[in-house]
Image (cartoon, rainbow, N blue to C red; front, side, top):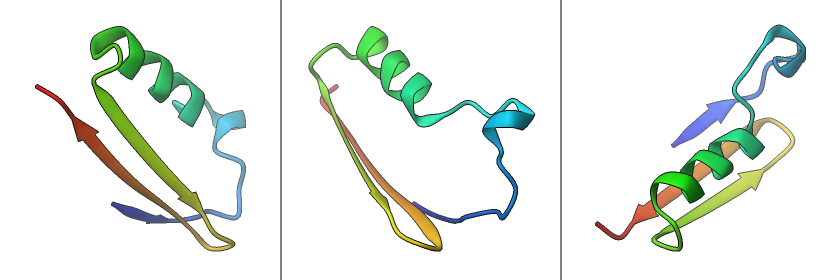
Length: 52
């Protein structure tokens, strides 16, 4: 998935945040997931793989 970055700071507006996403994944799928995040100048690109 790829998302265009906003020019405003979403975390100050109450966004979920990448650290929170990773913490929740670890709680729900301990050592059974791989999250790749690419942070470019204009986009975030993520890939999530789950071992179910």
